[in-house]
Amino acid sequence: MSEKYQAPRGTNDILPGPLKEPVFEVHKWQHLEVAFDKVCRTFGYREIRTPMFEDVDLFIRSSGETSDVVSKEMYEFQDKGGRDLALKPEGTAPVMRAYLEHGLANRGGLTRLWYKTHSFRYGRPGKGRYRQLHQLGVELVGSSAPGADAEVIELAYRFLADLILTPVVRINSVGDFEARRRYGELVLEALASWLPAQPVEFQAMVQKNPVRQLDSKSPEVQGLLAGLPPISECVSDAGKEHFCAVQDRLTEAGVAFAVDPSIVRGLDYYNDTVFEIFDLAFSDSLALCGGGRYDSLVSQLGGPPTACVGFGIGIERTILSMDEGKIEMCEPQLDAFIVAAGDDAWRPARQLCADIRAAGLSCLYDVDQRKLKNQFKEADRSRAKYALVIGDEELANGKVTVKVLETGEQTSVDRSGIISFLQS
Ligand code: HAM
Image (cartoon, rainbow, N blue to C red; front, side, top):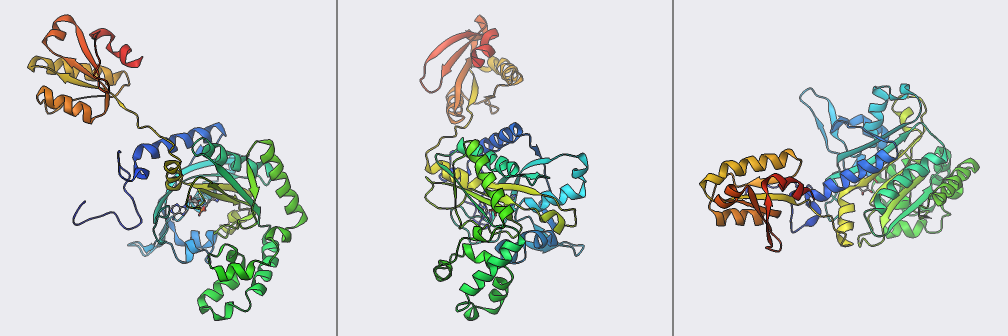
């Protein structure tokens, strides 16, 4: 460990394995990113990349000033030009800002976008909770149909179901603005005896957005709210119909889900369908995925009313979950390590290495040109499948001696056939 510098608290280096903390082995990240790209393509989503920081106001307007993410956890700073900026705490608001700024709506039809992004949240770090976290997400813009909600939930489910043992989708409907206002009044009534004793700032926050208290971790608050009807009862008839249709579509698509009235989500921009996905096998009951419908965000950012739905999946939590479930993600092995036996073999060894790489296979040789013993040690360390030995005899016969490093088994292969040997 470096004496002087360490990665900032709550952040992680992601390194080539094997590591003591296997979550941060880079091949696992690559595995998830490739798999997500693939599943998004099959659903017709296209990638978008946005800057790492944005105008701070973008997040205040979208996530809501009473959300933890904005009120407590945002990495805000002023640049040398005096602009108020923030490292992005989540991916949705920047994507929608870009959607508006570049007039993606003018292309017509629905817009289906996916992204992988760093996000930054100044929370208390722990297992599955980081200050720099990584998300894979999608946003489907332009449809208010229940089929759109079902599509993004299905996409998240299909991706996770290929990775973890027991994904469980929990969905709820938080209704529209009016439903939340009505339900907020019920929450305030239920908290009336407790709220005045709380710090003034906190009281103001609760008054502004009472519904957020539904996912409060305080047992006292939970006790006071226990008698309330579920929020879904305040949802309008049209909202209830929409929610039923979403459930029908999910059942039709074979997505296993449960309706859970406690799912309200921590960001303020949601309406109607909200959902989270958990892994039942994951000991920490943290959501791997969270998302929902957010039909008023675009207009809050100055655009026309636009129906949207999307989700974010935490890469760290997904890998933690996979590790707990003992789900292997194998690191691609190096195909070959070339061992040069004798001074005359170095040039042909380099040539063979170049030929193997040109065929798209992975190959190394000892650039330090050390003795045979050290080359074999290096071949073992590199965890190559084969050591390819070239010495005087092999050069004279146009052959290569192939050693399977795991078993020690040896064969002789024609130099001209070595690439097809490795490919097979
Ligand atoms: P979120 O629920 O705040 O939603 O985050 C999505 C996922 O990111 C979580 O389910 C979790 O896996 C991961 N995550 C969140 N915070 C942390 C943390 N501190 N450490 C590790 N992982 C974390 C959003 O961010 C929304 N933008 C999702 C969305 C997209 N809604 C609509 N479109």
